Every structure is written in structure tokens, then in C-alpha cells.
Image (cartoon, rainbow, N blue to C red; front, side, top):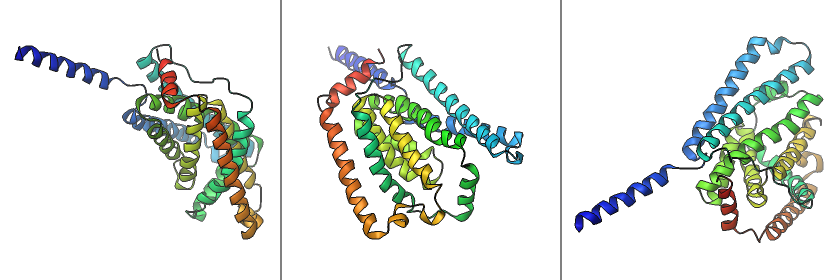
Length: 293
């Protein structure tokens, strides 16, 4: 009798171990690997650019085009790698959530994004950027339509597909919503590969993750990402001494802007929370889990 009980217990423990070993892609361990996969593709593309002698190309437009193409290749290669991992674990039923979103959501998230930019811009200035690094950024970004398309179109689409459509989707199936959103935001900050963008990207990634969690679609996130990047790009067209809200408005008006922005952002988040309140945490997670079966 004791032997039978022992065998049953061992069998249950074995089954639990088998269940624990199975996960939806990615978990934290797989995400760590994915970061280095992305880094590898970025390095390969950088070497390819150096081999072509991009810096020796006199046409700024052509240089911007090559930079855009290598960026797209590195992100697409990482996305394809991640999708293959998802399909290996979940089967051919895997899909990225481009679910239709109610029209009213888009003006709300755009307004929230504009309000959020006020705080992200100030946070990015917490760590002063060395002049040498500033010159590198100026060399990387040219004020032409290809560079703008790179930042405002290509980056929001590809990064949201990877960071929210694949990574956060899997994390929500493996962890609690708060933990999943925070982990995905950390990854989003790290892939920017510099501290001057990492912290604002992390905080913006929390908002992007929450919106994905509530809407179950990458489309609102793409719109938010594009809005934030567009605002940051427009600042680059201003004189250096005016590339911040504080320098543009002065302290009294800047404080007022911060207060108004906080109220607008809070109101927008409350509206989204209430409108999607019928989709409780359990129902959202069940819906996400059902996508893999």
C-alpha cells in the first residue's frame, strides 16, 4: 500500500515537472537568448554596412536608405526566429494579434501619447549625453524623409510586432500580467542599447504593454509608438537650445504643461480601463491562451 502511494506521488511529481517544462515562447530564459539573437543580427548588419563603406557614401539619402534596410533586415530576422520558436511550441495555430480595435481607442491613445511625451522628454534628460555620443546620434539620423520613415514607420511596426505581438503575448501566458508587462518593458528598454533611450523606452514600454494587455492587439501600440517617435523627431528640427519643452516654454508654463499632461494621461488611462473593464484579467489570459490551441 505504501509502495503504491509512493509510486503515485512520483507519477504526479513527474507530470507536474513535465507541465512546468512546457511554456509558451518566450519565458525569461528564452527572452535572454532572444536578446543576444537580436544583438547578433545587429552586429552582422553593422559589419555589412562597414564593408560597403556606408560612411564613405557622399549621398545622405543613400546612406539613410542603407541604414533603414539593414535595420529592417536585423529586426525581421529576429522576428522570423521568434515566430519559428513560437510555432515549434504552439503549432501552426500561432498568430500575431492584429485584432480590430474600436475607432474611439485611437484618438484616446494618441492624446495619451502626446501627454506622455512631456514626461519621457524630461526623463531622457536625466542622464546628460556626452558630446561625442551626441555627434554619433546626429550622424545616424539625417533630416530626410527616409530617416523619418525609419523612426516613425519602420521602428513602430517592427518593434511592436516583436516586443508586444510576440514577446508580451508569450509572457502573459507564462506569468502574471504585471510581471509580464514589466519584463517586456525591460527588454524594450535594453534593445535600444543606450541609457539615454533605455529609461524612457522602459517607461513607454509599460504603457505600450498595458495597452496591448487591454486591447489584445498590436495596432494601438504601433500608433502610440509612432506618435511618440514623431514628437521626438520633430524636436530634432528645432535649434539645439530649444529641443525641450522647458527651454521652449520656460518654467511657469512648463509646470502648467506637466500638470495638464498628467491630468489628460490619467483621464485617458481611466477611460480605457473602464471601457475594457468587462475583460477581466482571467478572461484576457484565457483568451490569450486559447490562441495557442
